[in-house]
Image 1: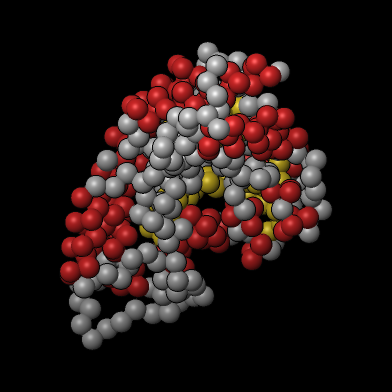
Image 2 (image 1 turned 60 degrees about the vertical axis):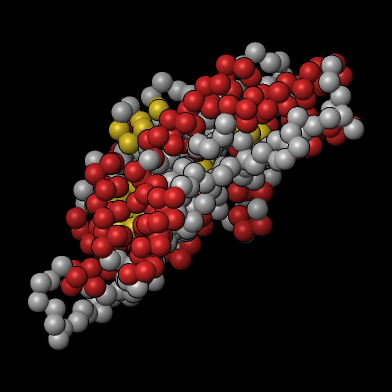
Length: 394
């Protein structure tokens, strides 16, 4: 048995293999540089519109609006669908934006538990949380694995509540052959530095509803008619109107240029992630003490994350030991009921057993397109090394 690096043994890697890295090439550098050289760097111009058109085509959806974050997308989706004064159902295991985003719309967050197997919204628990005040549910496709959307949509339709997909993790993933983000009323994406399609900071709303799309265009541009005005042929001596309250959620054409190049190779990047995940699954599924990810038959995941399930009592040690081996393993979300903000709404530790079990047992391993075969082998080697040590100790 190899001596662990945490106890003075030789580490698997000298240089740390980070848990994620964007997959950039000279295309992104050149595209951003060309926009800068043009001096037309503000948002809403040709490159932003080209990205929106191409992403809409990729997703087979009518409208795509490029924004500065997924949080902004969720915010505008709530306003466009007129979700105000009531309650918003969110999984307890997610980033705070999913639940917090409705507060300015006077939507109180009502948390629901998740499935332990996928960390996605538990349909039965979601249904139990619905009451007369419920206006909207925001399912989160955790790690790029689809939620059980048919059941969620059917329940929502019966109760007359909106479904807004938080597809921050899910670009390029699908549910029964249909791209995630397009399986409900309206979908929201993230292009943050940690995501599968990266422009640094960014997001998008997608929908097939003309009225919602036009409302979002007005809201993102400080409440002006700039988007419609841009389509007019004779603009000389004219300007657009201020028509409502709004926000400055527009995105620069510099970042749109990066996003456009990323979109061109999105399927390639997701395929590389899939190849890495298959290698992990093949090797790690043979080990005792850990469990590889669950993938249900209705989804094709984009492998945004790769998480193993480990014994609760060994999680902290496993993370520390892997990092000493040069493998940047880590946790992900802390359940929302364990954060101070959500204590104000009556939530406390112990309220959501599955969400808390996910937090206690899920460990993230490195996965990103630019990993080499040697990188993947090093991850497996390190996990085997740590697991074998624990087996001897138990």
